[in-house]
Image (tube, rainbow, N blue to C red; front, side, top):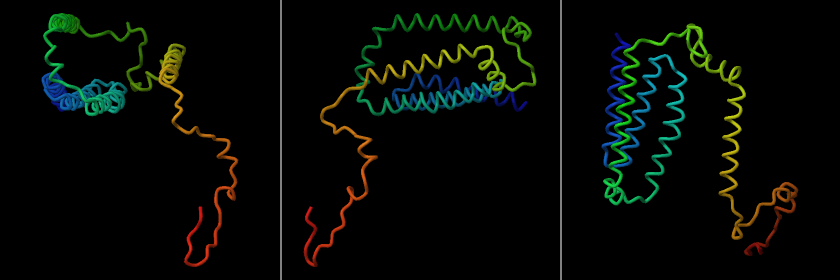
Amino acid sequence: MIQLIAFYLFAVVVIASGALTILSRNPVHSVLWLILAFFNAAGLMVLAGAEFIAMLLVIVYVGAVAVLFLFVVMMLDIDFAELRAGVMRYAAIGLALAVALVAEIIIAIGAWSAGGLQLGRRIAPIESDVPNIEAIGRLLYTRYLFIFEGAGLVLLVAMIGAIVLTYRQRSDVRPQNVSRQINRRSKDATRNMNPPVGQGVEL
């Protein structure tokens, strides 16, 4: 009974916060409603036994993506009145996407009403007493190890490419000589002075 109440509570909040994300006129409020939706979706994942997905929702989406959205919206000087003025130009595209989403929801409801999944027919079946995170770790580092490492290499290449594309040599900044800083002696950095009384230090 408690699980049922928690499920309906999380589900109602997710739907309401998702609707308010779309309907809010203030973009900062939209991002805050989106964060609330992510938190409640993580609660639904915990109820479903997918605690790893719940952790990813909180750490990655709430902790990184949503906060990044919030900073971008707050820091950029965007004229939202001008953006709203051109909404009708993309009404046809938005309507087509809405029809596609409704069709996907109808298909999902039909698949759900057809019956539950049989665990024995899954590509990678797991034991019922194995935690979700442990099962994912076993699969990632055994069967899908090379694919996992390949994804890491792709991300590494993307990161290096972003650094190379954004790096530029600036002439108005003094370069840092690390070896000169390391080899500097203390007597070269400081100087002991004993000025007479009433006189200052000459630099």
